[in-house]
Length: 96
Figure 1 (tube, rainbow, N blue to C red):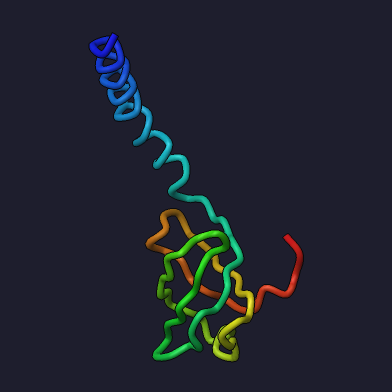
Figure 2 (cartoon, rainbow, N blue to C red; figure 1 turned 90 degrees about the horizontal axis):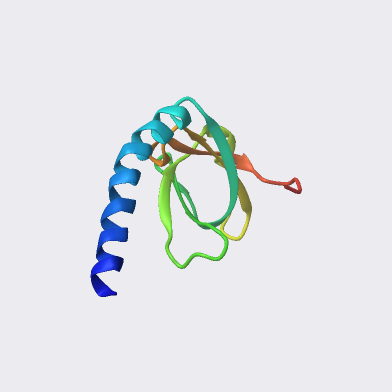
């Protein structure tokens, strides 16, 4: 039985290594957004945020339109392709 699980995992890993690049290619030109909480006021063109239901905090670059955000505000983050191209663009004062 244990060998079967190993073979299944190996098979799944092989399928994923084939599919993952195709998914990444399709998403590369995509734009998505999410809301997060501001943890620390903007400083030097960056702002620290925390996504809902996550413990980790990340620092992202922010647009001039996000300069007035304060800790506790909800902000809007745009993601262009991969997560490494994320930018805080302003206050998220809408329901999504």
